[in-house]
Length: 126
Image (cartoon, rainbow, N blue to C red; front, side, top):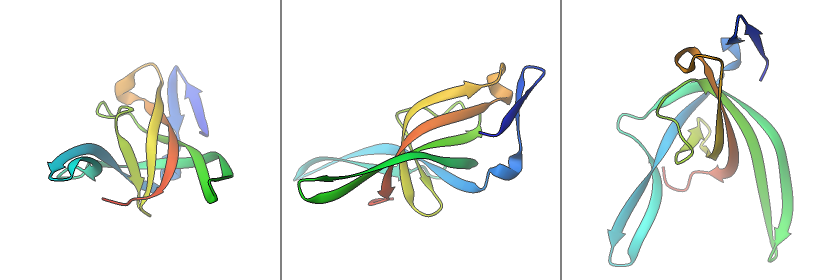
């Protein structure tokens, strides 16, 4: 994250927040086939602007299938509702699992958050 520390506060250029993300919550449903879990945006959806920086990726072959993992750091303004039990989806439909989060700055209400995420591909149900 290209940020500066000025008087104990993290300052970031808002022009870097070019990705519109939507937060997804787990939804459990039960039918005759059993219990299923899916990820859905709220109503209304909780959205914000973010900077998404790919960190690294791996491509491996498992059981004859090409499997890839992408790790990314997502930087947003502080939001109290964000936690590792949620997922995010970018405007292209790519879904990221929040694995860890770090609050930057001394005062959370004026700070930034860095979300360490695992990219899982396009949304299957959203």
